[in-house]
Image 1 (cartoon, helix red, strand yellow):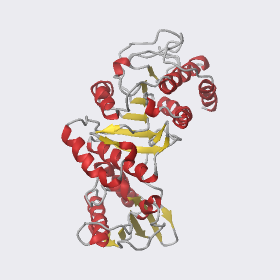
Image 2 (cartoon, helix red, strand yellow):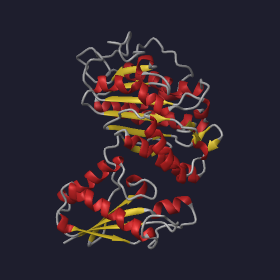
Image 3 (cartoon, helix red, strand yellow):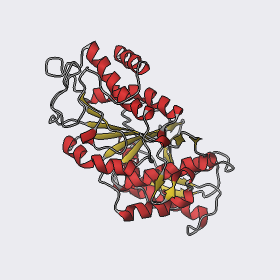
Image 4 (cartoon, one colour):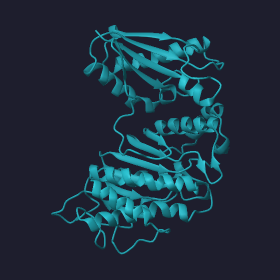
Length: 391
């Protein structure tokens, strides 16, 4: 594996611009039965996990920092795809799978038609996948990123390829532009609920049931990064939209360091007498609401399993916390924090945790863990903490 990473890094460093493929033979379309040269490819009909990389291909996405993060993120994407035996597809935003830049089957089978165990072919795959990803940055197209349009364009073909297998989508984009008439580069958290309702009402969301999403470089554009308020609003917006179509955001990061991510649950904190898990409110709820997001189900299911299998004894306190900003929720911040704790407790109960173990409390705008003077601090203060008393 270390040698493979070295080959990938060497290929990334040597990349040139453009989307033209070299003679090493990585397939240029998903429907191709095999590659035409030394890279090779097993038939596309093989049932396998699908990894789709959507690099931004517009001027809004053409930033030096985003291009650098794409190159760095290439290593875990390729190695992770190989570990899954996945079909890896690179599709610039706005294209369909039929017009993909690269499609390669990474099922390692040295005795079969896919000779990816050889040094030459692995280096070749890394080079061509990297060329397709960075080529989108080198040759930006007019217009703005259209993430929803791209998901709609690939949905049917992805479902046809993957059947019941897993689908991972890596979006390397600023996630900016305009959405339903709203300029996302200046988005505020107060605008998010209305924009989500408008997009859902327009019918532009596709079916992404059980897709895992990795968002790389959101908020990074040619003019620089967006401010903290807009960065938070962007994450909230896309978490709600992707959750509404059945998917889940596994990573929201400037650079992807791990792929795939198998856990969305923050690591527990241990003391002599307790185990605590702190869940950010943005993972669980829309702004100002105690109704759980669809994207929260995986984390809460994982948490319920942890409580049942690892810590099956002892009382469990579910505590809600807010920042100090005013809210129209009944009972104010205390009411909101308690309602959120109750929603989490109810989800844990439905997932199998005994009701007799569960207790809820809402602390409202008290017991801060960060300053409420900054957007990041307020975000840290909005949380639900699950505490297991060890016996």
